[in-house]
Image 1 (tube, rainbow, N blue to C red):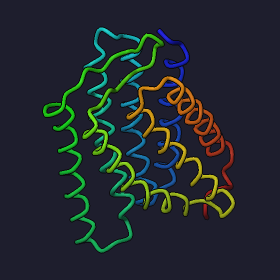
Image 2: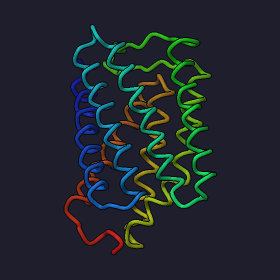
Image 3: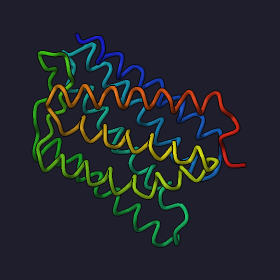
Image 4: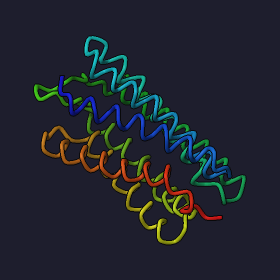
Length: 212
């Protein structure tokens, strides 16, 4: 077992839980649904941590984490479409839910691939190229409007920091689900970990950064 990989997933689980709870406590539709999405991802990251610790059940834990991550995209989409016409919002949510379901079916049944722990201890999601495309598509399409709306919840100086922090998380996530290169995974993991640490500690200890 690669201890640094396990610590990455444990820290990400803790950080996502803290940030998710803080956004839920903030209130408002954008913060609420963003927080719900993060808490779903918290369980997903915890499942992937278990996959690293118990590789005999790796396929099950990876699948559970993937399902929760996909469901979290629906919550993020709800937050991202908060300020649009209700009919159009419902259309986006229905379309997004169908795309999420299609992504799961494609990865699980149409283009299944073995998940594994590499010799260096990295968790390899090993998604088929078309499934990678589906994951990246929904991730990018949701986060483009979402990051802007989440950033608006903060004072001007901190809103820029939030945009950069969330942007790094998105880029890192894309690397983690598409790359099998050890150096790329290592750099992405450190970038996610350090940025997330700065993000959750700032949110936890600086109460004055929120828009009043």
